[in-house]
Image (cartoon, rainbow, N blue to C red):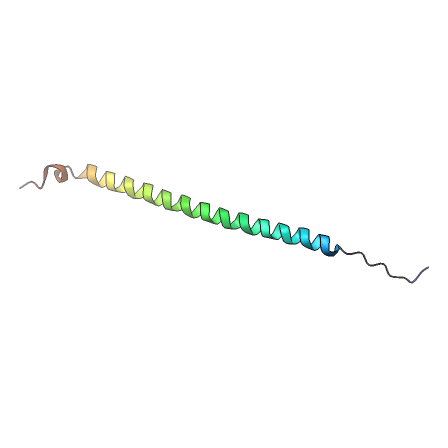
Length: 68
């Protein structure tokens, strides 16, 4: 038996591939976070508009002015 140790590593190429994947995942996560934030803001605005429309429909005196 030989007593020589063979060390196999990924080396610089493996490091660069792993680093590149890490950067891609970071950018994808950042983009997804931004898109989710926009969707949440759009949904909040839509719900606020619905609330205002429903509040306006419940009080018809607002259109004609106050009734005395």
